[in-house]
Image (cartoon, rainbow, N blue to C red; front, side, top):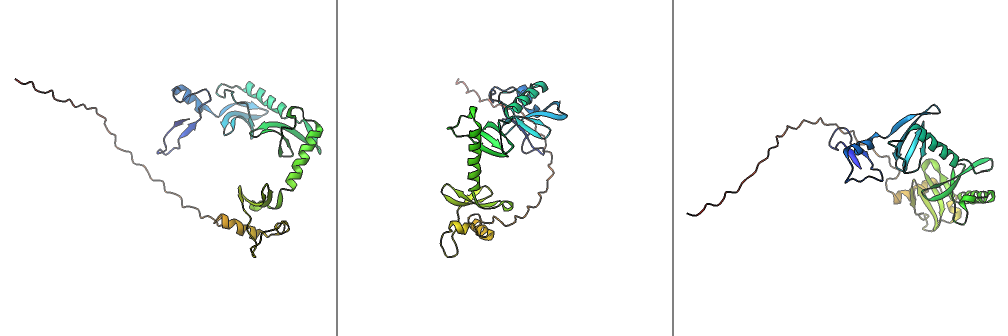
Length: 254
């Protein structure tokens, strides 16, 4: 990466990631400054502002409030509006519905975890047993129905507003709190919870199990007082001088 500014300065430093064909050992000042030209506004399309930028998951086009990922290898520093519109058209064609299930469109794509289909906001990974490039209607119906069945059996109880759920896992039921997967505790008499018990256990009892594993999970954190910004005094300028000491030559013996 390259950086403008320093952490000790009042303004936060700016960072830019090097492109794949650049090296920190050979990058020039001009090339480094070009990296800070992003995001670039290329113009308007469909009465919306169109810009390009690089994000956490790669390059993308921002059209209004939409973020559309584009293939890696595109030079965002030289891309013009016409090229961006072509990429948008290719993306729309690739994401066109390939089928419908219960009158809702099914689309397909390739993501971080491989090929998938998307239906009603649900992403369904495609196993290798299926031919991703030639999915039939029966394949699509089967994949969606399997996913729905799995999701239906996933939750034993769910409290979305508290971000807490009791779910069936590969190794048995567990508690999910935010993104943490926690163990189920035991009942007051020391015995394990059975499936019928988990379907009726109260939220307060589940919170108590969470609190044992995540102390302070439900205590409100006090806001830290705002730090006072100290005014920095300008340091006196130092005058750099060069000095050299010469060793005295040994005297010749007479």
